[in-house]
Each structure stands twice: as structure tokens, then as C-alpha cells.
Image (cartoon, rainbow over all chains, first blue to last red):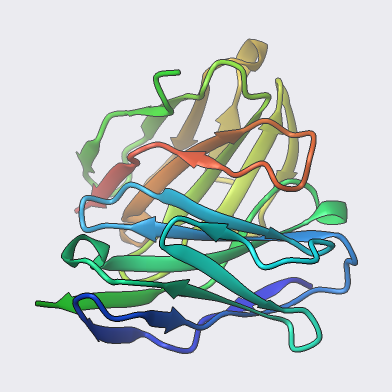
Length: 115
Length: 115
């Protein structure tokens, strides 16, 4: 069975500093993808970044990067130069290719950026 | 590309009543997903369609829940004989299925309150 674990219910970071949000996963499928989504208080789910299980390099998208450690089954999101608008819930999710197209989500981490 | 739209945004109903939600996916996407999200939790998978075929249903989807996607376009999610435990945000998402890296694009959700 697939499982995503986010162990940090809440995190605080000072504006302009970097922050790492943890995510570990479990799957027996060799082909899978890992996704991070942001959910502001307004409720919409915003796709941030993707990492494939066969990708050799860590994914980056602007201020977002994914620290992918396959042997440890971790896919941590790093946000550099935090901004007040980064305050939101962040969800890690996984899709295993042989388990159909659905995403399985973690419990989320609430990030608060302090001015 | 107008995004995924859901209707209504909010629904308040009395216990025992039936409710129906609608989702219009991104037109070129062939997969459509329904999720349920309760406060402080990650989205939970309910069901998904590829074109008009319903490919998977979660065990969370009791007999009171039914989803359809006639003609492979919009989808409806109906809850019969609503219970207070059905109160949640119901999220619809769509994607193009061909590669594991296709992200899900979410609508803004329908918030259901059962009194």
C-alpha cells in the first residue's frame, strides 16, 4: 500500500529565510511520482513541483526545490527566501504508476511566515 | 484553459436530504478525480474516471455516494441521505493521463455542511 507521511503539523519561518518541509513515502512500485501542493486559506490546491522516481537530479521550480533521497524514501520541499505569501498548508502527494492515476496525500504542514 | 470549475461553492443541507455537486474539468484532460477534505487533513481519494469509465472507487465511498461522468465531460457527485459526517470540502481535479508526471489540477471545491 502507498503511504505519505508529513510529521510536521506546523512550521514557522522568518521572512527571507529558507525552510524545509519534510515528507516520507512508502511504495513497492518502482515507478512513481512525488508532488507538492500549496493550499492557501482561500482553499485552492496549487501545484508546486514534481519529482519522478527515475529522475537523477532534484527538481527545482523558482524558489521551490525538492530534496529527493530515494534510499531514504524522502522528498522534502525546500522553499528559499520565504515570503509572507508563502503562509499556507503544504501537502506532499504520491502517484504510483501501477496503482492507477490517483494521488495519495499526506496530512499536510501548515507554514507560517513571520515578518 | 479556464481551469476546473465546481458548482456550487457552498451547500448547506439538512440531514437526510440528497445533494448533487457538479465538476467541469479542463477540456483537454481525460481523467477526472473526486476527493474529500476535512478540516486540517489532506485530501482523501474518492473515485476517478478516465473519459466516461469509472476506474476506481475508494472504500470511503459508501453506497450513499454515486458519481457519474456521462459522455466523458462534466461529472456529478451525488450523496443520498446525507449525514453530519459527510460535512467536508469536496474537491474535483482533472489531469491528462499519459505520464506519471501529469499533475492534478484542482477546482476550488464545494463545501458541504450537513445540519
